[in-house]
Amino acid sequence: MAGFTLRQMSRSVADSRTLLVQGLEVECLIGVHRHERSSVQRVLVDVELEVEPNRHGDDLKRVVSYEDVVVAVRRLAADGHIQLVETLADRVATCCLGFDGAVSVHVTVLKPDVLPDVAALGVRVRQTR
Image (cartoon, rainbow, N blue to C red; front, side):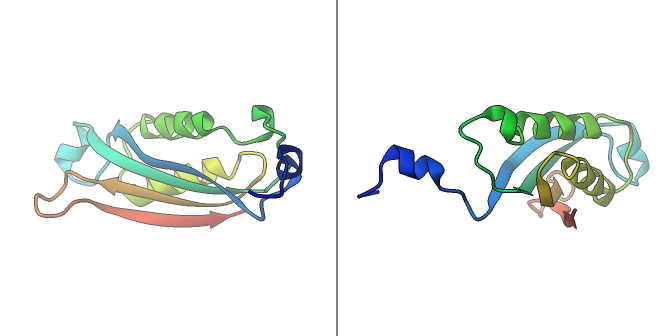
């Protein structure tokens, strides 16, 4: 960045900011079939959380923590049997919109081990505050 000092660059504010959690692997009881009620399945979760851009000043306390998002997804996945991947995606999205500064979220939930000739089956949801 020719012509800019670190001080000048730290004053700039992004027009938008999206927190990304990609490929989070969790195990959960999910599905409508009888065998899916008694054995856990591998599920992959992606979260794209748009947050209000701010002058965080490199202060972790002023941004949404990736770790908080991961912990929330893991907790929701472990919270008993869920019939539909849509339900898990909705719950993750609603939870993420509860973080301070959250504006909108895209959540993708994939079940990679359902059909042998398909990489994954799943859903993507979008919620806006």
